[in-house]
Amino acid sequence: MKGYKVTDAKRNRMIGVACQTFLELKQKGCNKLGIKEDVKIQLQDGTYIDDEDYFQTLSSQTVFILLKPGESAITGAEILYKALQTVNMDYLKAGQEAQNFFTEGVKEKVMTLAKLVNKSTELESVHLSKKLDDPNWFEGLDSRSTTKEEFMARRAQERIRSYLYKTQDDLKKSGLFQTDKIFRQKITDALQKMGLQLRNQNYFSGYFDRSAVSDRLCDYEGNFKCGGRWDLSQCRYEGVVTNHHIINPYASREARILFSTWNFDHVIERSRSIIPAMLEAGKQCSVNNCAINSNYFYTLLFTTENLKLVHIVCHDKGAHSARCDSVKYITK
Image 1 (cartoon, helix red, strand yellow):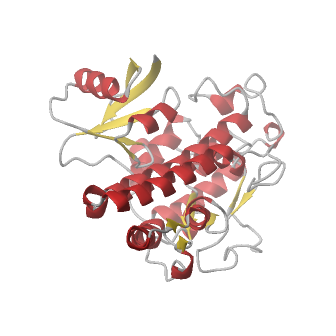
Image 2 (tube, rainbow, N blue to C red; image 1 turned 45 degrees about the horizontal axis):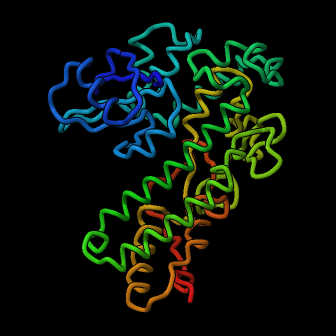
């Protein structure tokens, strides 16, 4: 058994649960929270969990939010405020006043927080790695992580795994997946190939690991730079004297928490472009007896050829004009 934490939509209380399976977590969580209705289960980053395999990849002490029908979890500004409040940062002194600070203009407020975090960062702790040497950095984290690099590597893996599982879920919702056996097999084959590639690549754990030989998106000290909005070649704040679109989550606990607001942005969007393209590829292959070009879609979904790590201010959630190349959908 592993220990997890469960909470409800209001996030007023956190309760520990020990279990082995996703169903057991759901049953015990509902019982401890006094919930009798059927629930949806969500992670703090908004990812919905309904798959045993994905559940088994999550580390102990993961927080699960149990939502009744019609409920949505507290997110955005309130989550950011509560996360920062838990580390007792000196500048968050007046609870209600700080809460009001986050009610509007969250992106701009994060800029302000970045300035404060950078100001309070203890530079001497940047080069420390082990939990024994910098225990404050690890406070409240999964105890299995004994180094900062190990923890950050797991965070990168979780993000990449979430893209795989979300893609699987989206594709399986297609009517053809339910009714067309050949279409279903073509999609399944492509997903299995991508899953195998990801395992061989260790789910790109190196993206956030400053000790990684390849794939890492930071320098050897752990400094990350914003890649800029999806349609720009660089961050608009690059070159600015006080550029707060740079962060080192290895420096302090506060910086680590603030780094969680940085996002991977798909230049060619996953939900609006890649998923429809994969469905179209599946249709073509079910008729022409060819194979979906899993390598092409793998590149778009999981690699930095299509992913940008961006500051929350540069994360444009509007529709992107970049589209998949239909010539590359299938292989003969």
